[in-house]
Length: 167
Image (cartoon, rainbow, N blue to C red; front, side, top):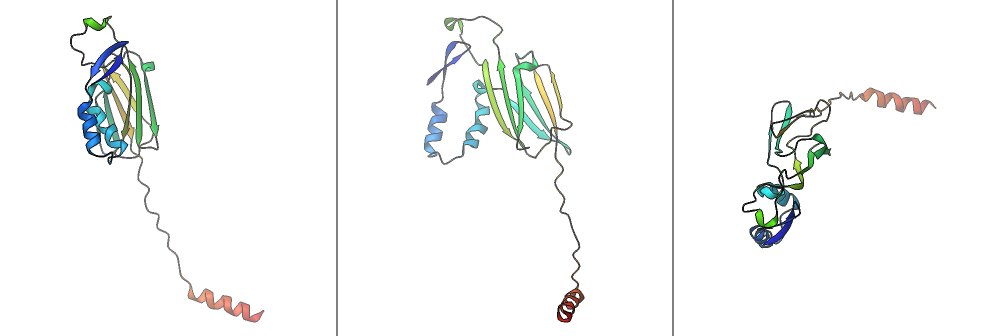
């Protein structure tokens, strides 16, 4: 067990299972694997759903306890990675000995999501209501293969040779 400071309080967080798993794999799994499973540990940040429609990627983020947009930072990297940072304040005063069960997370969090498609920030729609932030990110249209007809003109080569011979 390790002790994390949350809201200025010491909180026991069992990471032995994750440590064992990481040690048994011999660190052969990429960092992205550990970032992906971090969503399974509620103390690390909000729960997130990602789905897609025909034209957009939709990200729904649970953000209970956030009442202001200035507590959330969103960045799009490389057109397919969404970085979500925020800070959840505790609305009630508690002391270390007063906490009997602590499943909610407080304080700063950061999540990085690899999106299923490249998206654009042009036309992004963001709605925050009832503790849910819903982002609608338009999918970038895939570049279509451009077909160009190239005409092979055998006669042009003969003409070039005749011009050279005349010189």
